[in-house]
Length: 171
Image 1 (tube, rainbow, N blue to C red):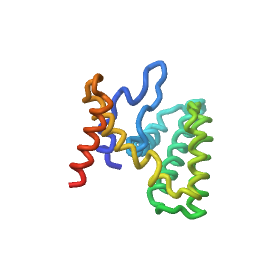
Image 2 (image 1 turned 60 degrees about the vertical axis):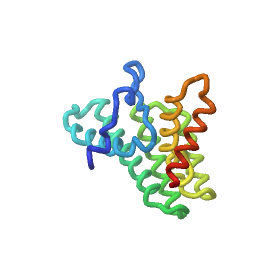
Image 3 (image 1 turned 90 degrees about the vertical axis):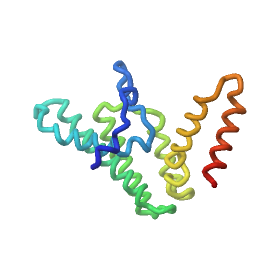
C-alpha cells in the first residue's frame, strides 16, 4: 500500500464533529479504503476482547475487505462483466452493507442505488466505464472552472472555459 494515495485527505473530508461521515469522491476513497483497513487491522489488538467496540471493529475490517473485493472486481473486469463477476459484485456488496450496518454505519440512499447499479451491469456493462466513477475527474475540473467565474457572467463563462479547455486537450 502506497501512502501517497491518501496525501490529499483533509479534515473536511472526514465530516463534522457532530456528524463524522466521510465526504470524498469514489476515486479518492480507493487509496483511503486500503489505508483504513490496514490501520484497523494494525490496532485491533489494542481493543479489549469482550467489548462491543471489538465486535464493531472486526465488522468494519471485514466490511472494508468486502469493499476492496468489490473494487477489485470493477477494476479488473472488462467493459462487459461476466455472470460470475456480477455475482461477485453482488456478494461483495451485500457482505459490505451487512457488516457496515452491524457496526452502526449510517445507511444513506446511495446504498440502495448501488444495488441497482450492480443489477444494471448485465445490460450496461462495467459501471467504471459509464457511471460517475469514470466522470468524477471531469466534475472536479468543472468545479474549479466554476469557482473562477464571476456570478454576473457565470453561465456563459463556465461554458466558454470548458470549451476552451476541451479544445486545448484535443491539440
